Length: 392
Ligand code: CMC
Image 1 (spheres, rainbow, N blue to C red):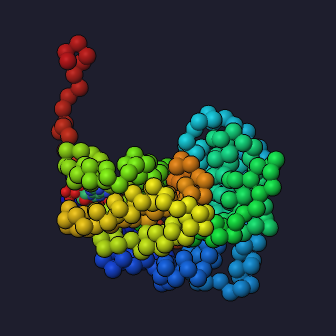
Image 2 (cartoon, protein in one colour):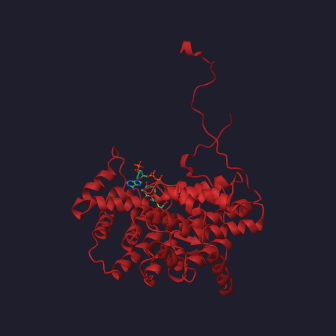
């Protein structure tokens, strides 16, 4: 019994206090600890934003150096984890591998699973941020049949990730600093986004006292869906399927048709109803990267730009306040860098790990913490007597 507020999709329920990220959906504003995302994307870099999200303030030079050293120290994964990867089918989606391997981290690093120990919490946070790029790159290398590449701690976070993904033992590989900067910016733009579905999943999992690796694995599983982090892969596949600008009206018509489940991937957002500030930076970055790589007339970028234009001029999208979101342009950059579409969501996951961890830390430090336990409006049968099988 009891009277409960019915709020499917939690469109009007706040489940926590938070001081990490602020979004004003009408203004298209995204602030981390008060700092606007466009300033962070332009002037800061990913590990500095990680520090900001985790500890609440921008680091001093000494604090940043110390933090980077701590993260760098943990980039390798336990050698025995290689066997764990090898248990997956070669053609497994890297997100499937990621969910499994991150979940298994609690078996490899059980000296940082006690959530009541401050030191263990801190080590778990650093381990997750440090090892996710290694794990994501290993999932990639395994899927294409290449040997795992160990991290290089003389490289920065983003450059090291590109190194682990694209270098092969037989060849000399130099990370292009401009590509590393673009990679870093993609990480920064995805670092946190307050109480989205995957973050809420992490918080709900952590409310039971589950260990941090289990909680982050739950977040990764949730992120995988096409309405959430899986949208970047789905968006690029959609641009590919559209193929040429002349076919855009057909797809816009399908997106507007209520009898057709098709949606424009990379369009719309639960909170942003004016524009997604991350998409603005991402669009500019896409132009820069394609320019750098000498990719002119990229057909997908052409389709993307024209699709954006036509959709924004269409009353349906204007009325429903549907705008390109962060996933609309990120795929074009990642593809130009050489990533297959199956790696787009793992890249989102590795960047969002710091956000999940920051929210997890905040949640378990909250003295008001209660186990998450939504109620329901029961619509089923009322009490009735069991019927023996021969009488049914
Ligand atoms: N294409 C066509 N119509 C759409 C779209 C779209 N992409 N998005 C929403 N609508 C329509 C929807 O049909 C509904 O119409 P009506 O009111 O007539 O039933 C209306 O707009 C509101 O949609 P909703 O599903 O009730 O809105 P929501 O806040 O629950 O969903 C969303 C937000 C992001 C799940 C949704 O816009 C969507 O499915 N977009 C495509 C997937 C995507 O790009 N996701 C990435 C989101 S940003 C990064 C991330 O979170 O990972």
